Image (cartoon, rainbow, N blue to C red; front, side, top):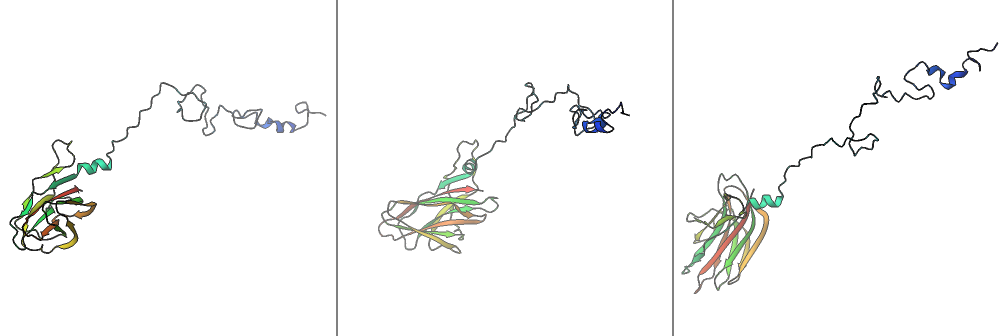
Length: 239
């Protein structure tokens, strides 16, 4: 006798999802979850809840135009060139002269990093000028013992003149006369300066002067009727 409840035979309706009719969370016509139920949560999602979505997200939910996100504030960055300019200094000696020229009398100039300065001096360049009619021999010494008769130059300035008050250098330019060669130093370089000429030694910070040390320019000349006259200028960065 044909079953009226199952006209096509017992179990024939199971292939059409008959066994899922009792589950309220499943669409009776298809075998996938009800769209009103969150797949990750066990409770229904209200269709009236509108969560704001960023316009950059590829989602079909409208973005509220009234929502404003704060702009990201980036810290002000100081370029390496600005930092270097703020810590750069330059200066020149007074005129170094020996007149008249006694035998063996010479002059010197040095960039000095005094004890307790707390910085290193990175030499950028040295400029030596010869104001006589005879060539001058310039010898550059590292860490010689400074003579006691040295004087300090007041012709030193920061490279950045936009600061008020101006930065004060830790390095010092000292100069004086010397009857013989420097003591306890290492001769590192030598240059010949022609008459009435200037030469510049570009260093780009490669020579670094630590606290309690110095770099000295020692000047000699074969004096006859002329006197030795010269100036020495230093440029450096304090780190």
